[in-house]
Length: 453
Ligand SMILES: [Zn+2]
Image (cartoon, rainbow, N blue to C red):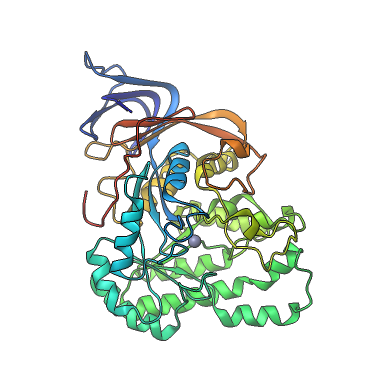
C-alpha cells in the first residue's frame, strides 16, 4: 500500500472535461484539481503521464454469493477482480448468497462474512420478496442502499419472485423511505406463452433460448412498473434493459416526471445473438442478448440518456452449472462473468464512435453512484470527492486470458477477445491498492452503509 498526495496526468477526466492537471489528495479526499505543473515540494507524486485518470468505476449490479455459495464467487475474489478492473465501489445484489439479503438479520450475516475480505468498497442492496414488507424499514435503517425484486423466478429458491400484490405492499413503504426499487423486468405470462411452441426445441440452439425470452416480456413488465411508479410516486430502476423496445416506455415515463431510471450491461452492447455459437452457454443470461439492430438502439438510448448507466451484472457460477458439456441453454445457470473487464470492453466497442472519456464516467461511475445515493462523494474527480481513482491506458491492447482474471471462476464469454484499454493502477481513498497486476497491502475496502461517508 502506498499513500499518494498528488496524481498528475495529461488526461484527467473532470466534470468540466478532459484536461492536463494535478489531483491533490489529503486523508483520502480530493482537495483540489490544479494546473499540470502545480507540484508541491515533498509531495508523494504519481505521474500517470498520458494515461487517463478517472474516478473509479461504481458497479451497482454485482452478485457476490457469499456466504452460502462462496464456491460460486466470494468477497475476496470478486473485489480483487473489481480492483484489477478499476471498480472502486460495488453494491452487492441481495440474492445468490445464503441467506439472501431479505431481512436485517441476513444483512448482518452478509456484512460479517465480508469483513476484512474486500479490496474495494462494498455496499448492499436489500431484497423485496413475498411476505417481507415488514422487514424493509429495518433493512433500510441498517444501511442497504435500496431494494431489488424479481417479477419472474430468480433462479434460486430462497429468493422468490414477487407478484403485483407484493409490489403493492412494498411500494408505499419504499416511496415513504424514498428508496429505489430495482426490478428484474420480465413477466412470467409472456415467458410461458413463448415456451409453449418450444417444448421440443433444440436446447443447444441460442436462437431457441432467445425465442423463449421475448422482448414483450420485458416491455410488459416495464409498463407494469411504470404504472406502479406513477400510482405510488415510487423510485423504480429497471435493471439490465435488454430490448430497444423498452426505451420509448422509459423515455415517456421520465418525460411525465416519473422517477424511473434504467441500466444496461456491457454484454448487451457488444455481443449479438448471431455471434453466439451453438451450446456456448457462457453467453447465457436473462433477459437474453438480442440482435444487432436491437444493439444499435441500445447505444442510441445510452447516448440520449434514456438508459442512465452501464453495470456488469457479474453473476458467475461454478463452470459445471453452465452445462458446457451438454451446451443446454435451458438448463445452464443464467449469468455472465465480467466484473474485471467492463472498462476495456466498453472502451473497445466505443472506439471510433466519437464517444468520450466523459461518457464512460457518466455511464460507469457518476451514473451508478447517483442510483446508490453516493453522488455527493463518489463518481467525480473534483474537490471534496473521495480519492477513489482508476488510471488506465486507452491505447494499450491485450487479449483476455483466463489466467489474468481474478474472478473465482475463469469461464467468461470475453475469453480470448482482443480488447483495448488496460487498467494500470487503482486507488482507494488515496491509497494505491492495485499496480499493474500486483495487489498492494491488505484488503481495505469499506463496508458502506447508506447515508454514511
Ligand atoms: Zn443480476
